[in-house]
Length: 197
Image 1 (tube, rainbow, N blue to C red):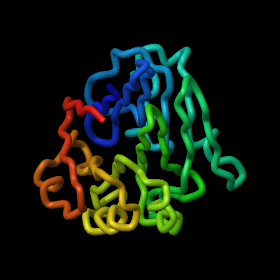
Image 2 (cartoon, one colour):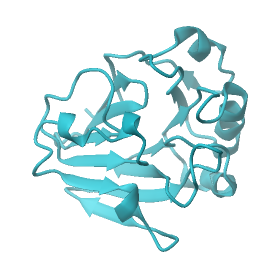
Image 3 (cartoon, one colour):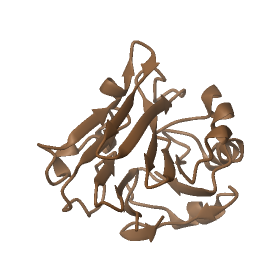
């Protein structure tokens, strides 16, 4: 079974049915001992780019914002049965839309959206057509969008399940803020918790 393990802050790990391991924005928490096949980095802030925490990073396929957004074009990566599509992200005072991406991660018939540190961007108005299974949003309201805007994005994108992370700078998680989030079809996942997708 495919699984999603939340490490805390903006970091999480996906393991596919074939045991392909995907790390997204490595930085926080534990759970880096599985050998990485793919490492995704949405932007260059320190709390998203600790690639060397991931076991096996030397041989992993690393797909950062630099490879994912080239001259205004959003790139794809197909590797070991996983398809990654970069999408627009950022659009706030802390995150330049020309230097940030989100990711659509497709595997085992499942589509996961990793928002990165974004605000609402115009591309989101088309994303309901993708039939996303799990949308993972930021929501600290300091460095990226707040809970209200994240809920608005969830309503626009219309994923089957919505997950909020990146809730409090300097902390792995803020459960009170997660509970307060008003997005539909909400799942609350706490650090060091793994769910079956």
